[in-house]
Amino acid sequence: MTTPRIEVQPDAAALATAVAGELSSRLADAQAAGHVPQIGLTGGGIAEAVHRELARLSPGSEVDWTRVVVWWGDERFVPRDSEERNARDARAALLDPIGATNVHEVPSSDDASDVDAAAAAYSLTMREQGAGEFDVMMLGMGPDGHVASLFPGHAALDVTDQIAIGVTDSPKPPPERVTLTFAALNRSRSVWFLVSGEPKAAAVAAALAPDGDRHETPARGVTGREETVWFLDRAAASAL
Image 1: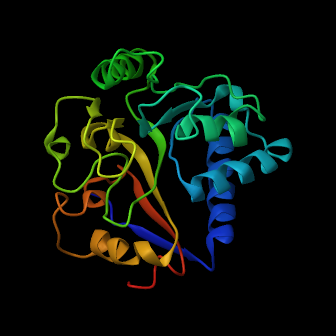
Image 2 (image 1 turned 60 degrees about the horizontal axis):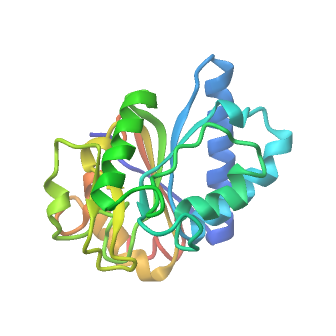
Image 3 (image 1 turned 135 degrees about the vertical axis):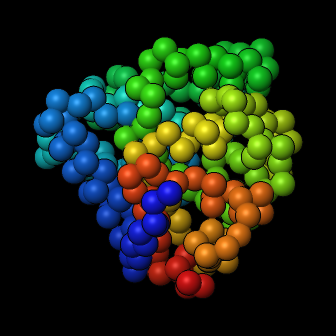
């Protein structure tokens, strides 16, 4: 397990700028070395800000987004054009403007008969077209410490033999989601947590405390093989 690194920025805007700059640099370096990087995107306000900043940086960067493989750590099982889809926001803010073509969305409710079928299809795609690990997996975290759609006390926290699973009782709407399991999320060279705001400060402190249980704070259950970085703004870091 890697020792987490904590980077604190003054506010959410500075946090998004720092993450976008670091990711752009990592992707350019990987491609310069002949590697096709695989990344996991997340949803939420900070993720949207990161996506906009990446799109702004793209014209002057050395990143060829057609050679970046894009996945998601979790997704809401709703219609394809729903505003609740993480992929919809990411496409609008980043992926479509910069011309990304190697994008693997979690099947929507238009594409699969139910949430378990969507999870099975996403798992199959990852087996067939994934690299066996993510170069960078970006994750948010909720005020309850949940990560992706792995919530405190849920049975999904103990699934070890699947890549993705369906969630039907999310305490945060919408109730049906598809999420990668701990086993899949932990197949990441780098895990980056992007967390902003004082309401999440207690969960950040719990996730980074020396002792604790991932069943109570699921974010404790995800670490990168080479690095785990917590990108925080000052408000989210206020309880550390």
